[in-house]
Each structure stands twice: as C-alpha cells, then as structure tokens.
Image (cartoon, rainbow, N blue to C red; front, side, top):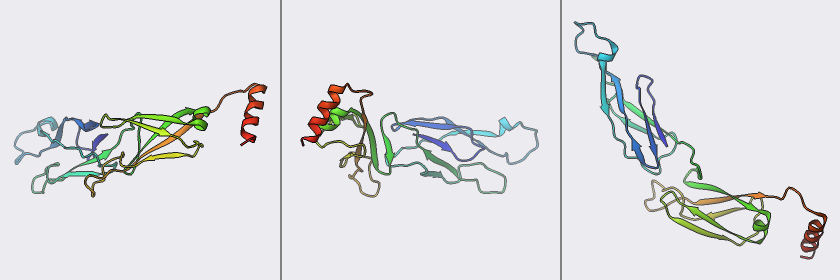
Length: 187
C-alpha cells in the first residue's frame, strides 16, 4: 500500500508495506512574512514529518487530512494537506471490498478428487482448508472471517475467497481417453 500526496506542490511519497511506514519529510511552500530579500524557492521550503498510523481497513481512495498543514501564503489560511490511499498489488491476495481473494493452481485430478489448500494469511497464520467438492472452473471456496477488518463492525472481518485455476493436460493417449470415458460414463 502506498500513500501519495494529492497536491502537486508537495514533493514526497510515503510508502507503506503491510502497515510498516517508511516516512519521508514533506516539503511545502512557506511564504515569508515580508520580502525584503530575494530568496530562492529552496529558501521558502519548510520540511516537516507527518506520521500516519495505517488502518488495515483503509481502501484505495481513502483520504487522510491534516487541516491547515499545506502551503501557506500571506493573508490566506494555509491549505489542508491531504493524503490519498493507493493500494499496491499484493503478490498473493487481491482485495474486493473487505474480502481477500487468492487463486490456487490445481491439476484436473485434484479438481475431481479433492485438494487441500495451504494459505499463509497477511498476519502470518497458516490455514489448511480441505476441498472435498468437485472443483469446476467457476467454483469458489469461501472461508468466513479471514478477510480484511470491517471498519464499522469491530472484531468482524470479510471473507477469504479461494478461486481455482485448473491445469488441464496438454495431451492424452488413446488409452487414457478410453479410460476417462469409461470412468465418467459409468457414473
């Protein structure tokens, strides 16, 4: 997850990875009270650090505002400093609202006979989920309460949704085809 400053006059990007911020200083224009000297724009910059405590339920587009901490001009109230949440793709999970989605690659045999999914959650726990149903290309296993926290319902979480990418064999021998036909037509 990364947070981008929404005002073009600010120069820093704050990067966040699973709730651990790497904080940079924010530069803003701070106009002097009187201009009796010629100053470069670098002399007008004020550097200040802003620390954000990330919430796990913040989604893309969430705005965090520091009132009157933006650019200043003489005789004008300073603007607000606004950060907007922008999510970076995760290597394992996709987010859909409060649900997390993971895709597992399985063979055709596993899709027909059963499979056990091993998932490491974002908080480091290992889940073992047995799949005993026949897995079709559109099948989805739902594990309740293993998604993202729900902000307005403390202690509740969304779901973990497991989707499947079934690997089909690239070719079969005539004996294999005959065997599969015999097995599937007899049931």
